[in-house]
Length: 148
Image (cartoon, rainbow, N blue to C red; front, side, top):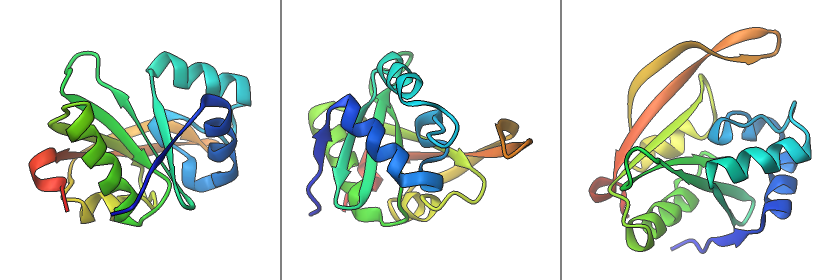
């Protein structure tokens, strides 16, 4: 199983920025257009935790309305770092469901599918990027189907 290491906020922001376009939409953030202090502030307000798994960045934010649910994100199509995060969330945070959202065509979508996530919806014209409104895809996964 892939090992994940928790990152402190300053390192997490630097990793997000280094991920470039792969990190666009990561937990609703955009490191291409947002500066470091805004990214840090957004991560803190979400109570997000980010982890490194080799070259991949994964993270989660708890859903305040559903205590057993977490919003998750990844910067890679590789499902192994995401599986490690989901295992951590199921074991230590007692999460039973996961929600992922990303711009249409996001690379991480392949990783979500490989981990048993289903695309359940589209938020049309939900996100502003590159001088145009972009659709955001919504994925849902369950802990009992996401484990390796």
